[in-house]
Amino acid sequence: MRTLDQVRPTLPANWYYDQEHYSRELDAIWYRDWICVGRMDALRRDGDYFVVKLGTQSIVVTRLPDGTLNAFHNTCRHRGTTLCRDDQGHFRNGRVVCPYHTWAYATDGRLVGTPGRIETEDFDAKNYSLYATHVEIWRGFIFINLSNSPVLQLDEFLGDEVNALRNWPLEDMRSVHQEKIALACNWKIFWENYSECYHCPRVHPELCKVTPIYEKGVLSAADLPDFDPEYDGDSIDAAVGGGAKTWTMNGEISLPIIQGPTEEERTQGVTFSSFASSLYVVGHPEFVRSVRIMPTGPESMELTVDWLLPSSYEAEDKQILEPILGLTRLVIQQDGDVCELNQQGLHSMRHQSGALIPQEYELWDFHESIRNKLANMEMK
Ligand code: FES
Ligand SMILES: [Fe+2]
Image (tube, rainbow, N blue to C red):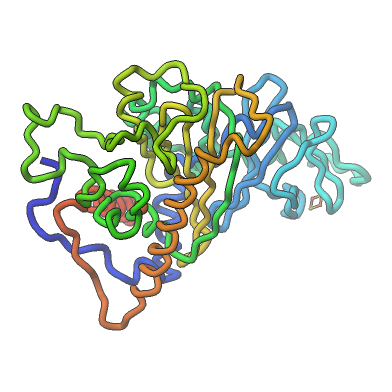
């Protein structure tokens, strides 16, 4: 049984707005875990880069001539100036040049030029490479890890969740549409909202039409007390229903079917893969949607939603994408709205903690993992 057998307390309310607690979470989670920061298809040429703001840190990710990546802190080794002001761009001639006194670095991080510096014997450029950080790719998704020595390798960190979408050609897909959404809520609120469907009947009437099990306020039939695997089938995943084939407003598929997923996976219409706390990916028969989560303050966060299609697919007319954007965009707006309300209400001086009910079992697991990570950090 996945559901909780008793009511459990939520995390303390002030963990959602207290600045000091937010800093602890940055240290224990966001600066320690592998965090998804983008897609390879955003870095098409050598020297292309983007900048990620992670908590108080600014990190540059760039593509090297051999197709691998380098990630480094956006800070010059001379006197600490920010190197890149723009969110994305291209390093011309493979050089990262500081805008202050023009120290120049190769994209792999080596200091290769210090124009006009008066020479002294003690200066060794090797001591002034950019501050590197760990970066790895999983099937087109770029992950960084800011700790000096990550506790887990990326594949250990991602675990079995990688299997859910193994049949979708994720590495050969590209983003055909991206939206960034700023939300006035703590990052945990959004993750909690993603982790239950108790809110679905009230908040997502359109989504419930194409995934009728959500009308019952559970993530899948397996969560219902009268679930019988012999009668209901043994899948514990949600599936489209009521004649719908995918997550579009009318449930119809209007783009080419993606090659790879099995007939069963196509019929299911929706498959989730979750990588707390920074990413979840949803596979459908004709598109994939990835949602990245980034905290921007104790009471603010940013979502980056990408709609992915096979690279070979040429969408000449953006109109053709409208069906895959419509419902999923609406669902995110609906979620964002209740997440912000949730955030506001937590400020009541009377509210110290709330209640998790049986179908909120994934929130309990999420909360436990947060408590554990904070405890681990404090033991060190
Ligand atoms: S601070 Fe970058 S070159 Fe001086
Ligand atoms: Fe939702």
